[in-house]
Length: 458
Image (tube, rainbow, N blue to C red; front, side, top):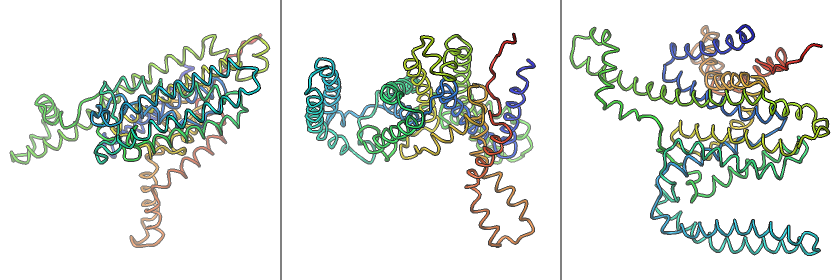
């Protein structure tokens, strides 16, 4: 217990800060912050597996997050029969042609390995294949996007439970990571970072511009939830009776029946929001705990020690017979799958899919800041980094506004400087995160909870 004292202390402080948000702002806001902290924790665990375990720089976290969100739409949204009738067969035929083209190129590559015209044959096959796919797909896409574009304009999904989409999101991200890994993992670290960032931009660009797939920038709203809806709770007798029982003392202070009824209605509305967020918290916390147990076991297993040996010295590990490329590919896929899972969790929590919101600053570099602040190579540190940075990201504005009002109380309300500072309060998040990162890098260069290497004394 003593060796975990710093971890317990750090998480206790974090929990205390979230409770203070509930006390001074609202419990609904506090739970919203907690839920996003848990989502960030899943993302940081995925990034930490890649960077902390194997030393792989992945700047494409945004792309895997977007794929996880796309999975929620493709799995949980009900299909649109009119769109499928208009152009569904064209899309399916195009998909078959793409698969056939991939296998055809692979066949040519192997069958004509030493043939001097092999490259020309592959190029000719790809060009002809793309032309045929466009001829088949484009009429179907136009027909699909013309089906009630204000409300649908896309194929919809499978209408399955939303929790299943979390698994599919991880699979989508893992599939992309396999392709990217096969192409880019042989590159030098800086080239790998650039390649993964560009591929992520391509993925997000496709999702934003292909309206038939998930409405593009028109967004998909009203996604399914794995928890009750507030409106259903507000009309449920058991929930109303529970809220009334919990606030009996407060309600008894009112003598008027109408006032008592109005207060009860407001209490039920507030309680329904808190109840739903508590359900989401329980679900997200379960995922984080399961992933933490699995990643901790993996970290201290022979496989984990092998990965850290490869990270620290690839040449020595390769000389000892370890397949460095294969292990890098495996851990790249695992880390990306976890990020895809987090992307699906985030869209489920929001209840909407907004491809236009996926930007590198928020979904790549802030995640990297979380891992660095928490401590690379340490799962507890990565999770803590997710909590700390996201808490600052959300609360930087209110904290800045409080400090501005505190230090400018002697100034008039119309003072130019005071007005400017108050209007700039939302942008203080970048300043606070930047200063916080600099302070941590100066005094805790290995993060808040650094990686512990067990060294046996001889």
